[in-house]
Image (cartoon, rainbow, N blue to C red):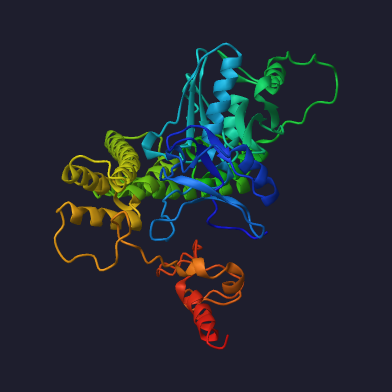
Amino acid sequence: MRGDRRQIQTAVLGSADSEEPLLLPLEAIELGAFRRRHQLDTFWCGLLLGGCGAQLTTKLYTDRVCHFAHHPGPDGQPHMCGRRARGISSADHLYVKSAAVAWFRDRGEEADIAFAQPDGAPVGSLVDITSRHRGLRVHLDQAVEPVWDDDGIEPVLGMSVPVDRDTLIRRWYVHRIRLDSEGTARRVQIGTEAFARPTEWFGLEECEVTERGLTTPAVQRIVASHSAPPPRWTPGRPKKVPTVNAQARALLSQLDDARSLGFVIAARRLCSEIAGLAEVDRETQGRIDAALETTKGWMEDQVELRRSLYAQLDQAVIAQDTQQVRKLFAHVNAKAAHDRTEDEDAIVSRAADHFADVSRATQERIAAKVAADRAAADAITRVANILKNLNRGDYRNLRDQVETLIRYAEVAGDRVTVHQGRQIEAWKQRAGLSSGEEPKEPLDDDGTQQLNHKKPLFRQVARRYWIKRSCPRCLVGNGKDCVIADGTGNGELRYVPHDERLQPILDQRKARLPRR
């Protein structure tokens, strides 16, 4: 089964702003049962999925994975949607919230659960859970760096979020979260990771939230091992104490690692420890002197790099370049978050304000689009009802009724079909609200113009015919679907083939007609 780069595997049920996620089966044999089970439901490209809020349909294929798809536009062209996350994990934040609500409800407790977006992070990166015991922040991706020094909030890391060894040693353990697919849903698993121990996984029913934080059976064992009394001394062979030269070599190796990873604070601490070593041999002292000199130059370079990063971040904020601000903000937090000056704090604060403004503008734009879509949906319903009444002669004042029809048609916009548009024009002429030539096409019995319905080319040629040909427009070979030929070179698949691929088939059919 070949991949489909257009596939949308997740949707929400009922409406665009729904929080009820749904996962589509990948195989055609499972999609049939899925359709029967949800025959009365509607699927939407949810706003909380980063979608456009439009309604979706299911696509069944036997030669590729099944997926959700947008309805084509009125002109038959594919619907354009800016949604980025479309895979199986794109609705995991909704599944996490649903599982957390059920988990607390079963324990007779309540919790506030929100999809936080600090510093302009995309919706779905973070899930904040606040209970009467402790707050949890679930990091499903690396968009926001975990904060380990906040006593009120405990980070829970997704599978792609890294954690360094020092944090594991200092905290004894960290918690992770993963979601496994089960039919058309996702099941939450909690893992406990400790230094030099494999991660142990548990179901939510085995976990608790206490004053200490999130607790699993593994936490109890780890805490017990750290709290156990030391073993009784028994005579034995004396433990070999490493020499000062061996200590120096170990610290020098750690210093090399700190420089290669960009850990300035660790490098500074190691330099202090190395400089405090005494009575090392001449060879080791030479290595120490060289390493300290190299680290001194490296530190100076890091200071210049830090200054450049903050200057670039400030310029990006001034230029209102959101993409560059997001990129530099991540670099600043990763490489230069320690020991900030007042000027650096001010730059970070301005960047955070920029993200807040962008997020607010995005939310307002989404809300305005949802309101416009709802108004258009209501308007097209009223257009259909008014046309129905007009065609039955059910009106008192024709002019007023047609003026109302025109106002609703303007709100409905491109939802008005071609046939409805023809009927509206005919009634405008009948009510004296339109000037110009009389319609050239004859009128139906109800006073509307007859339509010369002509199917688009992709409706006239079956896939089994055109898939055997190459496309002269996008230059794909036979056996492959057409791709978007808009000059961007992104190679995204089209919902329908190009007309240039279909027209030769229709021309051949037309040429054979006289012979028949």
